[in-house]
Length: 141
Length: 361
Image (cartoon, rainbow over all chains, first blue to last red; front, side, top):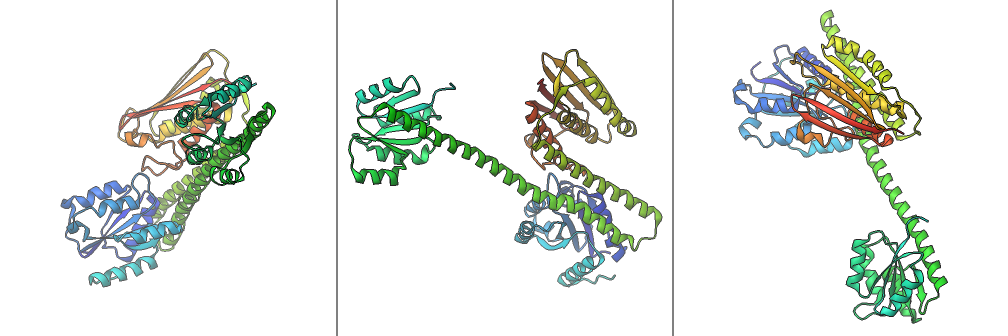
């Protein structure tokens, strides 16, 4: 799959496992990178030798993490070169029902979507449909 | 009698000040000033002045104006106006602008002064108590906020993970994969369990009286050796214990164990994976009524700029997922109960040393 790939940033291994499973169930060709810390992920996307010419990369970003949380990640992300930023589509992952978190997510333009944990097949399908339309890519599942 | 109550008297007539001081100095610590700068100097130097007397008729400013000026900068002392005039305008003015506690008529009677001071002192004490309670309440509120936030993440997080896993399991047919998932589910549940146990520690530390008994550190350390033996063996971490207690020591077992357990479990938990000489050391030395407990490890260490925050509730200085953000906060609460101190020294990728001192009770 050259058009779309995934990066998962979450400090909980079980949540990685679930997201990975739901994504590969939808299409086993999807490429997925996993990071247990936001700082490592940031380093990865800043390094352009990791660029494999994928059209759009979905970042599943957990919000509540120690050291660098989802919001801090997005703040650092927004400082990056627009050429890097345009390749990524950041999706906020939350298990929280805190209105303050949800409003804060809405206030960042780099959060393009929000998905409630746990990630489900249905939730992913809706998201992919939205992304497919915006970027005019065919996502077979 | 405890320390004398500090009172300040401001009057432009020296004779009044002298007479006032002579009358009251046995029972109170009397500070006097002949002008406003002098009074301000006393107020800056003695933040514990409880009662201020001030003459109404003074050259630069009236007594009411002086009180109005210090109302916001020095709100705590009780204000008493001394006036020779029964001018109703001045009285109304002083109540509205200067927030005066009482009036004393000139020339004063000693009994009247004393009763004014005693009444004012009662108000002062009630107000200070209120301020302390208020501060405690603020702290409790802000902790409650942190709690509500943390509960919605730290409890809901693992639960939503388990729910997600159950969903995914419906379409999973590979046993090995299933086992891997079960292992991760177990890990999440254990984390949740630790979180709830630490929350229980948190509450029991906030409440309850101390139960003082004789402490045998050797016995206590043996218990910990047993607890950590499994961990030490499976993760290949050596555990060295050195106890030096030649005198009796009295304290409360529960907070003491909580401190040791949290420090030790951190020392075991935050080891670097690729170090082949992993070591945790526990040294306890009891000398002249003070127990010095040193827990050191060869672990991942803590970055300098996080060191100041590690004792804060829900602060986590590592992205290793097993931290709850309770441990060191609980250690600090326990030490507060035992009048103990804690110091930390850490070098990133080399290790961390905690030094705890607790006095005997």
